[in-house]
Amino acid sequence: MDRREIFSAMAATLLAAPVASRSAAAEEAKKTHRLAIHVDQNDADVMRLALNNTRNAFELYQELGHELAVEIVCYSQGLHMLRDDTSPVKNEIRALRKIVPQVAFGACNNTKTNMEKREGKPVPIIAEATIVPAGIVRLVELQEAGYHYVKP
Image 1 (cartoon, rainbow, N blue to C red):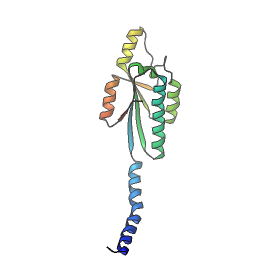
Image 2: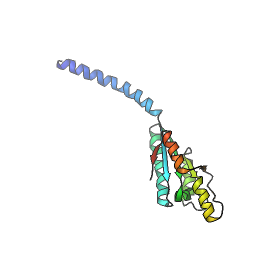
Image 3: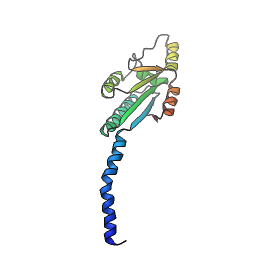
């Protein structure tokens, strides 16, 4: 190949690139990311990290034109995150729902039941949460559905 042929081939490649990137960008814009976040500690810093991870992922994907499906699953001592009477982050949860309305919260019923037996009283769960039969099973189901697992 002589120099002219090489330059012609390079020019053709460069001219074709924007069309290919626009097509790839259109495909990427339709992309939905799935995130399962696991909280099992009664630690306000860990809880806030889970909320911040959710907000940060949402904001980045939103800038890219992507969708985000996210569920924070709480069990064991992490259930305190979703307890109406003991949550150190319930105001932050409400604030996050205003920014990321699609964020879901799964509260482990096994943990809730055990806490109620131990404490001798009902354990109130915040309105933003849904009770799931078992937190660990919910995390497995989410991963089987294509969610990516994160533990802050």
